[in-house]
Length: 263
Image 1: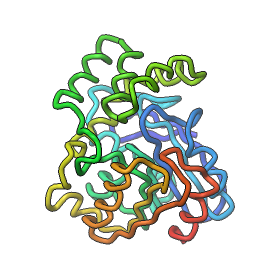
Image 2: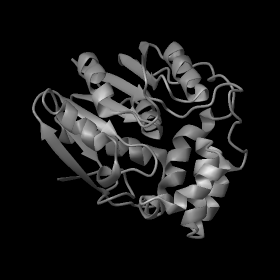
Image 3: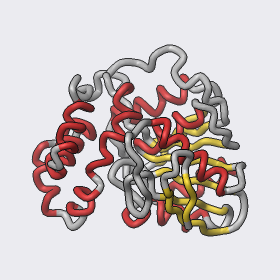
Image 4: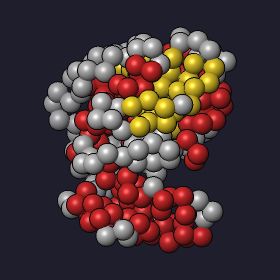
């Protein structure tokens, strides 16, 4: 299915299930054909009408330049309108940062759930480099896709160098490179909060929807610290840890929590 954003960009989406509308937002390098949100949608479809979509520049969606974070917020507004206007919203990783920014900017949602937005709020890991966003943009502009993915995984995600070096042998490597040009899009939402400092006072003061911030019990400490800190600064938020889960959360562990919260 398709709808158009405010700037005319075509957005492709899938709708399954019956019940109140839930929109799921992917993180970096993901879209419907390669997303942990796709099986999550299936797990929620017995209780909700679930919408998954390709963020602009990915999958079957268009990508109208120039990019701005406001355009992705408008994309979510278009999806909400297609869903009937009253939605529950869930985002994972940098998709959680996008979902949070959209609600802070005025997108009306019934409830908001966020899984491990990749913020860095203390010294549990090094912050991103000062030129992180500019480096990603330079690599993408030069079509150095493999280098952009490696840089993101090393400096953004914080993976060890040996792990990043081995990623080129993974079956998904080609798919990651194909979406590498959207890495600056995600960086625009997360980089201001990856500096190893507490959230600035008043951050997301407009995000007043009931919110649940979730992390995994086996995730790295820095991202778990950020989840707890985020729940503390949001106007109306709670925090939940899923035992045994990592950043790649399993649908069978997450779906029951979302069903309870969204109901």
